[in-house]
Image (cartoon, rainbow, N blue to C red; front, top):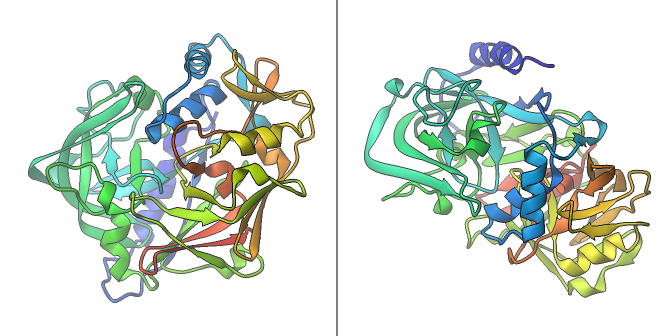
Length: 393
């Protein structure tokens, strides 16, 4: 069992020693490596699926909710395939170092404090005494299952790599639900979506990325997530050593505050999924574990997997763990992103394997989560309002 705090503390001290002061002259650029933390307890595919639907306001089918609750109570035997781990990133907030999930599907930077109700033990915490309380400001994140977090807002310095936002809105949790509290590897969230969906009231606040764009050598960041390995984030530059071929750019639809884009088609193996329509609109979301697509595409995929079924007892598409899974291909302009079949095997669950591809249900948009992103070098460019894709090296 990895001692997450020991590993992270050592890395945090190293990062702090190397950190440069805030530089507004468009010169800052750096790579930030994730830290792997062994997953404690069991992995529940249905629970991950339910959380993804709830994040975007989708309804959770009764059989999915039942399977999620059963697995989390320990009645099912689940384990991550190939020992996959959880990955967090150390961030300095004020004088505190906390371990955050970087999430391109949200726009809040929130953290635990020592006074967070319901937090229990095991979390690194932010000390609000270093910040300035934003009078009258509150925030709240709420999901369909009743889970969530809320609290007060401070402005404080936030350092990621070698760049610092000197007056960043930091959302200090006064209360959290048990689902957040039980994840002791993570001490909160750093949202990298567009500031328009920040939840601070009465006045929404800018994201960390929005605040530091002017100090970056290039106003971009890139996600390099990995399968069964820690990934990294590049801020202020594009690292050509981390991808092959050329980057293909596509326009972003940020009208809903997300990194929305349109793929031209989806194929299972060498067969295009005609039922998916002429194009496929979706969101690039590092904060969602699974890949959620429309029913017709998901059904077309699992028709090519012998023994696959949409299980009422296990809360999603499952298959024999010995099954050979076809590749999934997503075409964006002249570029085709390939998700190897083995990446679509998320977790062994009660003698079956739970699929990393599930239905988006009534969410209304496809969610290109980590199962897809772990194959790609993805450039997020808010200045030009575009996403760049290339296969990872």
